[in-house]
Length: 166
Image (cartoon, rainbow, N blue to C red):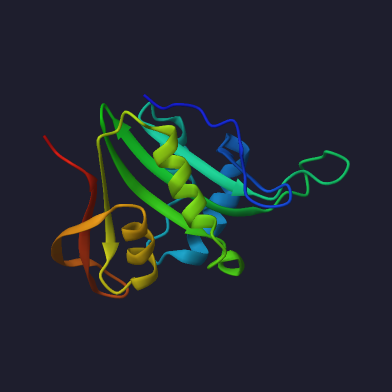
């Protein structure tokens, strides 16, 4: 079950909202600029249409005339929620928008939107110190290190958990 997000302000008209079909090409562009194993348009659409899928975007607000044509995608988050468990699948900010709090706001909104999720999981590259710090700031902890999880470049991965398993 996914609960709705009406729209959370970032700054001066920027907001976070649930992704729509028309956002998919912009999400794929950020995917390709951020990940060596970028999701295809079909993969993003699959998450968007899945009953367990949860896809948020952060974007600039409508222009002064209220038109959305000029909005820019700042970042996105993809997760899967099944019962009282959730998995963060992807989170990324546009390369020119990194280190400005977009990821923090997306992650906080995901957690806020799903108060019934008792445990969140994610995988992260062991060398991705910025992401690890973001996750730890939001209550995730490293549970285990898994060797050779990532390719291009080759890296180990941490399994991180937020919450408690019963």
